[in-house]
Image (cartoon, rainbow, N blue to C red; front, side):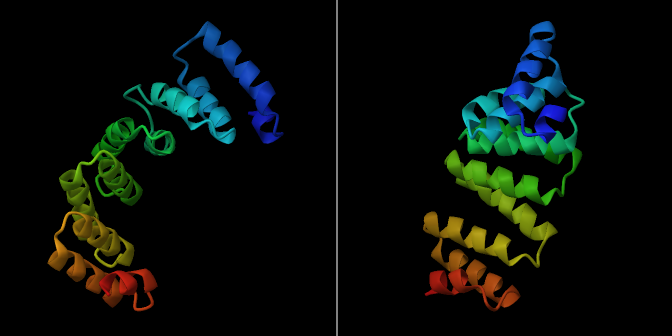
Length: 170
């Protein structure tokens, strides 16, 4: 931790590798290695470590969230969805997890699952203009234009200066 705080990423990596040689499943060291690689913007390697660190059933919600976000950065959306689902089992109304799961479902071409996530998010946070806007964008990509326009109108109703919603509305 001292190496991270001081910005000595290489030294931190060296110490963490020593820990992982002695105990390859050390969740704390795996999670810290994911931060080492994320700091270097090597998201593929970061996701490998984050995924392994998040495997224990006792993984905390914050750790699941961080691991899922790293998996998204690495374009490992199936892993991200799995982590978000675990997080949502612990915290069913977790806004970032619902949104993250929806975005990963979109990347996986699982539009109906993404719509279900966004609908759940809209039910929980009905005053979020961004949720309605995102639903509209997805509905439009599916050719469901009347629903798309309704979603944009709702977003504008909630946030009257929502320029991109106006642009998409036409």
